[in-house]
Length: 225
Image 1: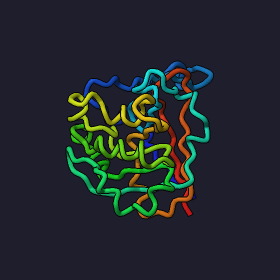
Image 2: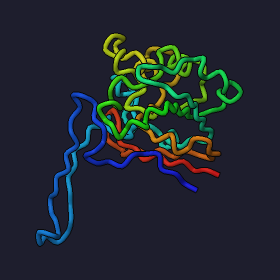
Image 3: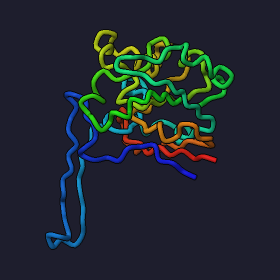
């Protein structure tokens, strides 16, 4: 059985302050006596369910099309669940109960439950839960089997803290010069609640192969037993 974890792309998608609006531009329509229906859309690469490539915060990092396709397939996923409120962070201690699995996991899903507010965009995008700098560093430097992490909020990084810290969480995960370990991929705004308490066999998370770019919309699918 397969479960989709990506949200549909539409004009009702939550939008962080200052980010560009989604534009959907009809080119031809059969209802207007054209021979087919065709459309152009303009989408900010960091809106909706998307994946960040290292290039997002590391100018020498790989762009979306340079990442090997196998890096978007995960055989040992783990969902870390803790209900968090506005401005709260996942800390290293929140991983302790999973210690017997952490060193074999290849993708880590952080479920905060905050996605329940997605139908109230003004709350959902305002100081949402995220992960701490210490947690990001621990994953990057100690959990070396992990290829990617995902979260059910608009960003892995606190919108409140990011301007003060210089976006240190993203840089900790993506910057190839900070540590002598591989950079990770980051999936944001993922509908993780759909796989809570599920026995997950595999995760597929294929992006558009956008040449030279920092991120891409992504269709994430969980295969469950």
